Amino acid sequence: MTTRDHVNSLKHRHNSTLYCPRCSSALVKRVAQSGYYKGNSFLGCTNYPKCRYTKNL
Image (cartoon, rainbow, N blue to C red; front, side):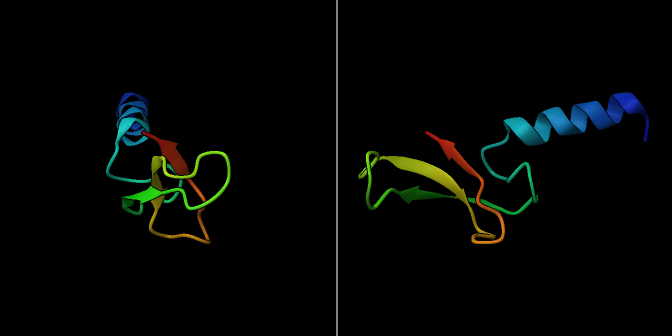
């Protein structure tokens, strides 16, 4: 794999809404249950609690 291929792979992975950029697990739509963002949707990693990656929608 060349450097260019690697960089393209990283860009694709970090822009994806299907896979977690940290651990490559699937992301699922979740709803905040408490706190300031209660009721708002976000994408959360299915590998929770090992990976706590979230992405706002």
